Length: 243
Image (cartoon, rainbow, N blue to C red; front, side, top):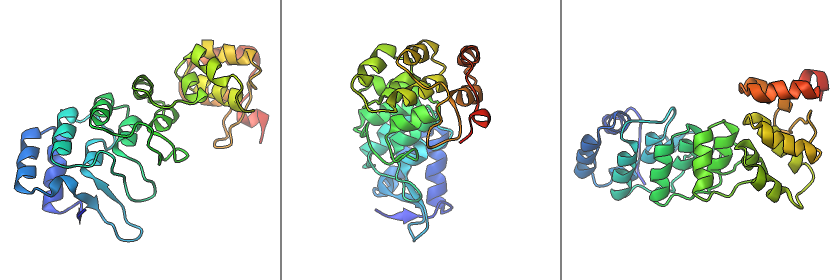
């Protein structure tokens, strides 16, 4: 698969066509160069980074005009829907769509055969759903679950799917209740958080990946309903709990 510099004229032209939704212009570029759909933009030398064109279509902040059409055109021309970024992580285009809450792109990628449970996320090397819930991209998270993504109890808790959370936690490992509770607070899901407290969740639990209690994460994410409820329970911030 060829790699071209991001500032090469062809790279600039195809990136612009993708980002402005110029599907007709993209088709012309692909017709003029049959290998274009499979190129990578960037630098594949050691320490470099490169990305396929489907990653250009799902690059931050996402939501580019006519993105579903763009994805279909690229895949029809030979773009690999499961191709990965090369660099500090190995995310697929679906990871990137999930991370920017780009549901239109997400569905187009899945319809084209993207692996819904692909590993390699910047979040613990996990799935697109893990990216979506970690970054608070709730529309993408719900869409992924609806499309059949493998969901952990913590993912379900962040979406307020209380019955499913309780079923997933039946016979679970120690710490899963606390993790699910933290995620429910992250997602502003009071009813789910209340159900997890009844299961014995630690309202001041601090996860290993971040110095933030449920109160901290709820406050940071603007989960005001949860913040008020946690204050009523006497929940504390990390500065008060300590490490």
